[in-house]
Length: 373
Image (cartoon, rainbow, N blue to C red; front, top):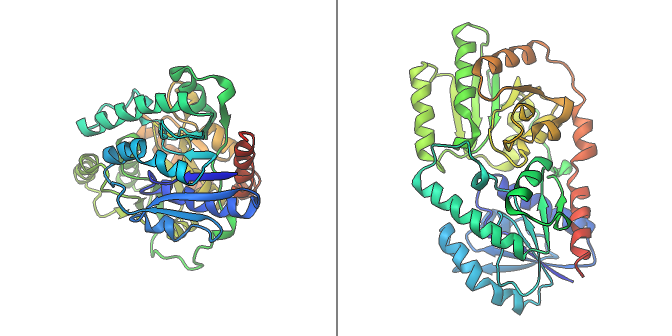
């Protein structure tokens, strides 16, 4: 069977790293099906990660602009699907090619178009989310099977789109455990609290910054806050955070690293005093399981308090994390101090190895592909 992985929407952050690890795992666990990777000539990090046994279909003229790219995928991509006799198309980012002449496995992984809590999107983002919402609905109708990576997102979106439950399956993300090899030495000469996130409105970073300012003003923490992630995607929000930092007079203690190579991220986890993920909207949260793998104290938004929000962390991290009200910087500050004071060897690494191994994820996905024969 010919299976195509459409990677064209994977342009930054976790979107790239997830495909990199998934392709490697599929190559290792599936020796029966033939894989094709649809990729733009500009996606160098994905191209370099494609296994030798997979056929690369590199598009030189696929637009980088997301609106034109979606149009291209709807009008041009079906011809390539037909040309390469694709039996199953695996599409991520909520949208597939509606005219694809084959079965489709759709991955609904972007919950921003469904979120009601983010009020400060720019007009451009509002239009983008509307487009994804309605094309996502049509894509869900087209799809043979629909993947979700958390039960929370599956239950909410299934109701919104009125998706047949038989179409849906839950398959969480995984880690390529063999590739996690951080440097032994601590790359920083200071203690630090860590978060790994694209700087975007739904990441709720202002609450983390305010909690950190409380710690500094009361001399409760002698270290810095490091935010690892791209700062260019939502410039207005980044500027807002910088203004908050300046007003709180903590600009010397907050570091925005910008985008970091995926392999370098593990150096940050290894020596962090704790990891905080304050998001109000997530489908999964890959940094959660990455930090747990390093036995770092992990502090997460409490989804049990807001069951109508896309906060899946309670099901992802279970009892291996500490949870806080994502609207309370004071509670977060208390939880950070507790986590650092009570820091001890945690067994979360074994938990991650058991439940989030990318090879096991790949096996389940291959089984879903094969069921469409």
